[in-house]
Image (cartoon, rainbow, N blue to C red; front, side):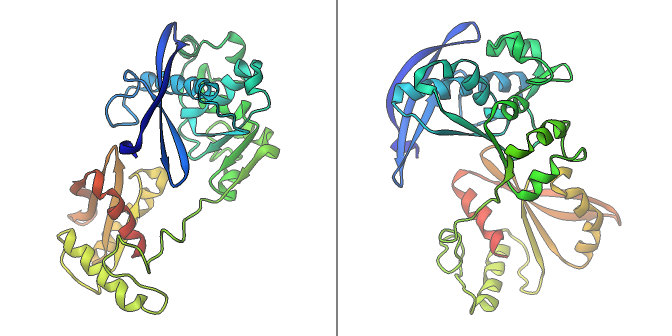
Length: 324
C-alpha cells in the first residue's frame, strides 16, 4: 500500500488551542480508494498505538476531527460514516456538535461498531474537554461523562445513529451488567438501534485448495492426507519435534483472561502431559510472538516465547494455524 500512496493536499485545522497540520494522501487497491491522514507529531514511526494514555486520547481526538475535516476538501460526501471502538468515538460527537451546521455534512449518519466494550478511552473530563474543545454541555452523565471522567466510546454510542457489534450474541451480552462494562444501561436504552453482525470471512481468500500460505493445499476429499503434511511442515519450521500424531492447538489472540486464557491455564498441565502442543500467536505492535506452553514442576505453567516474527512473515503465521 505504501508504494502506491500519493500526496493529495494539506491544510491547517484548529485543534487543542493551536493550528495543526493535516496532510492528505491516497492509494488505490482493487478499485477502492483509501485516504490517509498525515501528521508527524501524532503519527510518527510504525506503531499505531502507544503507552501514553493521555497522548492516545489526544491523538485519536485529532484523528476524529481531521477525518471529518478532510471530507469537503477531497470532495467525498458519504451517506454513512462507520466508526470503530473508542478511537473514533468522537466522530459522531463532532458530527452532531459542529459539522452538521455545514450544509456539506447535513444528512450524514454515523454507525458506531463495538469490537471490545472493555476499552472505552476514559480520561479526566477537564483534560479531555481542553483537548477536544467541546463545551460543558457534553460532559454530563447522559452524554460523555462517566463517573467523573470523559468516556469517548460512550460519546460515540450516545451520538451514533446506529450501533453494531461483532455478533448477535455479543449485542445481547453487553446489555447485561456482567458484560456491560458500566454501559449496559445506555446500551439497553438504545436497544432498538443496536444489532449484531457476525464477523465474516472471505471464502475465496481463505480457501485451502488455493491458499499460497500453506505448503500442501487440500480439499474435502484430500484433507485427511494433506493436513497432516502441513502439521509436519509447521513443526519443522518452528523447530519442534516432527510428530504426525501429536495433537496441535493454535490460537491467534492476546494472552489475557478476557480471551479465556484463564480457562486454558487450568488444564494446561494436563494437555502438556498428554503431549499436546499449544501455539499462541500474540499480536505485538508490528510483530507476532510465537509461544509454546511448558511445565515447571507439577502445576506451575508459563508461556515461553520462541521467537518474534517481523512484518513480512505475519500473514503466513497468522494463517497457517487456521488450517490445523
